[in-house]
Length: 212
Image (tube, rainbow, N blue to C red; front, side, top):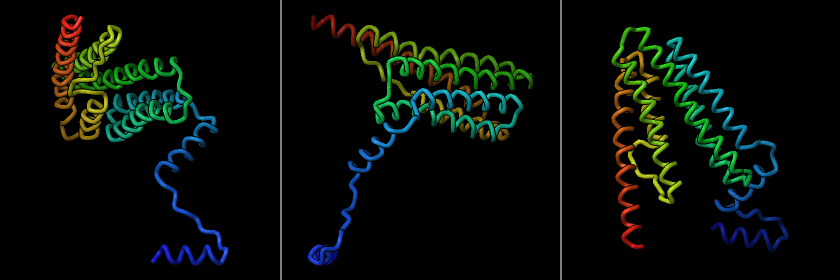
């Protein structure tokens, strides 16, 4: 029915608006982003600020507000890279800044979590939080070092989005006792991911040496 009506409107000289496809929408959005003053670095800095706010709220044991700030800040961390690709405004320094701030933000929030455990006298959970920070850093470092050797290294179960989800659940439901378990899960998954990447790089380098 739609096609005959459209044809009739065209015959009468009426202007017919054709539906915009997904590709056209993305192109329009991309053009608007390019024309705007928003930069990927601005999004990265916003994410940092929100994570600092989240850390302060967690330190004050305002877990729900802190969890929301952490989630929104982490969404900004996800958006900056995607926005950089869509808008064409990305730079090498921007990519470096993004990765650096990601590590800082995760460390700041986990430091606040460790402070909460320390204040409660939970030494085991506080120590586990330090281990979670170390595991997170090693997950990132193994990938960076592998890529410096020319090996793509995105393997592993504890990518940053996964870690964000786990920690967000722990913070939001901290009053129900889920904060410490979430930290223990982060330690376990981070350690497993680090080992996965180590073995992956070894396998890739051996395969490359064998081919050569």
